[in-house]
Image 1 (cartoon, rainbow, N blue to C red):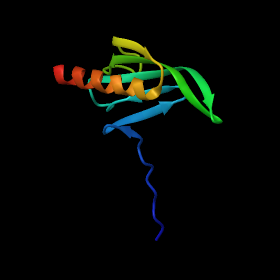
Image 2 (cartoon, rainbow, N blue to C red; image 1 turned 90 degrees about the horizontal axis):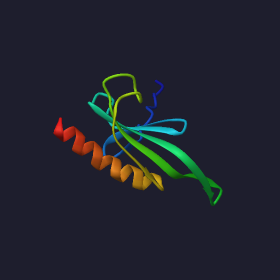
Image 3 (spheres, rainbow, N blue to C red; image 1 turned 120 degrees about the vertical axis):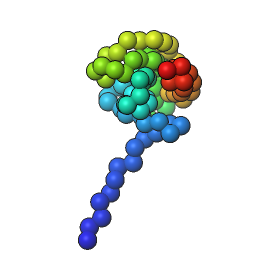
Length: 97
């Protein structure tokens, strides 16, 4: 019998990360809020392309994905810093209802 391999979902602090081109959606798609991270600039380090400027938006997730009302926004200089502040924003928004 053949085994079926499941694709592992990429997560950060137990929340899914979904990448579509230069846009990353962070958070559970069933929650009231979601974070949208847009890669604005990239640079090459050691033959690897890395994000050097990220635009972060905390959005309402009740309508079309990535088209909701923006509650908070900021820019960060790398993906780690963007995800770090994003996690805090998302936890705060979800705890307030």
